[in-house]
Length: 238
Image 1: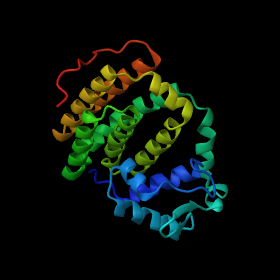
Image 2: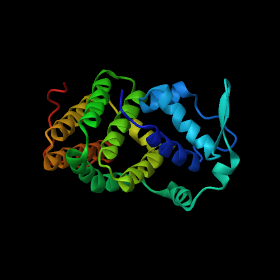
Image 3: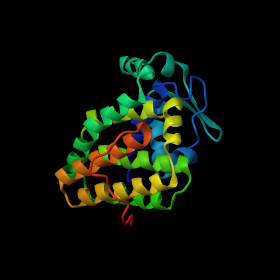
Image 4: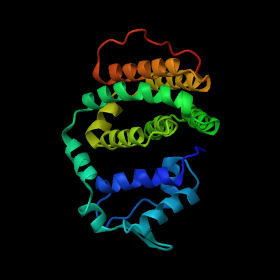
């Protein structure tokens, strides 16, 4: 189970609510569903929901549901307005942004990440090896990358990644990812995650950055076409 903290889930849910992913006066997914999505225990999700309730963003109906308050969506901050302006951003631009930011995030995580955070990434990775369902695999893939950003200890980087995730959850982007998915590419992605994780565990920032750069370049090729230099063989995924 990943060691994501309740404050991380609070941040993520707040951003998703501001983006109107569920809409005003709509029910939040239940604790069990959110715990599965974030890969945490239900009490971790419960603490995050309690904090958002104290902030007036959610209203909890014990034993029934948690409702998103209308003011939380309509009275969103300037940041959420910026996020809304990203609706027209292209998936290609998102991938290019990831290619700029994520290799450096991996390098930072190699030096800043704790042993427990690296072990959490290992656990996510092991789950992804066994996960053949596309949607669940994609969630584990996103969780792996989110864990790397969490290990950087840089709140701005983590927020930038959350913005990227919000855009990537859009139906148009998700459809493009779906079209670029296959069993061979799932195995390829797992192998590349293994290389990233090995570099992180070796505390080698240069190797971590290179492994991440290659992983994203291959992902870009699979989705948008084009060539990828120094293509990594599938190799051993365990």
